[in-house]
Length: 186
Image (cartoon, rainbow, N blue to C red):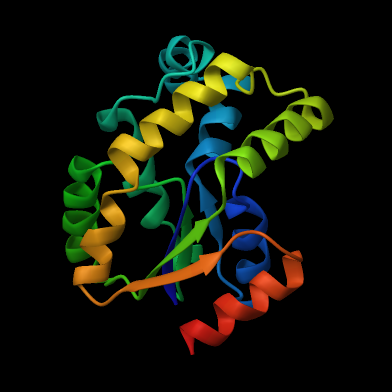
């Protein structure tokens, strides 16, 4: 199973990706986690990404595409994967299509989670308090939600038109949402 998990920040993509990873026994690949690892370890990529993340901006496509392609080529992805936080814009959809073609690993589905903006804001405030994430300031959150609405939400139509989109409400009990996703994936 090769899946994208999409939706605005705070909708529960990471939580659902982890549950789906266990269910299907495939890795959940979060671009956010990869970047945080690089930031924490002060790698060259981490240093390049730091300035963007601190301002609440998205890391440029070239950096993101490189880490995703490298990660999808690893041995543990042979039976599938779940991408969380990628693609975020039309250029990344094109880059991903090319990567998957080169790797001979077509996408099965794009799972789209959705929730009202007030729910998302409350969840991210809670996450910021619990995890102490520097990228979850009110200003950064507002900017990321605006960017998602403008650049990423329109990508759902691409996957819908390809017959690959599975839409699920991201509000409710975590297990109930997970069961609905699995049922819709068949």
